[in-house]
Picture (cartoon, rainbow, N blue to C red):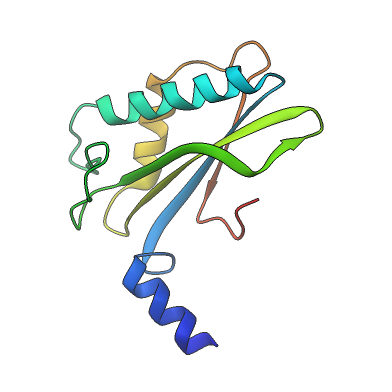
Length: 128
C-alpha cells in the first residue's frame, strides 16, 4: 500500500512532495460563509507578485512553481453544530512559501465579522 500511495502523492505534488493548505470558513448562514470564502479567493488571485510564491491564474493549470487555489466549495461536512462550512485548498510545490502566501491572503482579505470564522490547516491529515 505504501509504495502505491507514495507514488501517487509524488505525481500529484501532495505532501510530503508538495504543500497543501485547507482553509475552512464557517458561519451560521451558508450565504455568509460562501461569500467570505469567495472574497478570500479573489484576494488571493489579486495579491501582488512576491519573490516567495506565485499564484496560478484562476482556472489555469499551475506552473511547476505556482500555488494553485482550488474552490471555494462546500466542505465535505458542510454543517457542524449549526455552522455552514466552505473550503479553499491551496496546493503548491515545497519551494513556494505557503505560510507567507496564507499570511498575505488573510491580511489582505475580509476580516472575520458577523460570526465568520476562518480555520487554516497546513498539510492536513484529513479533509473533514
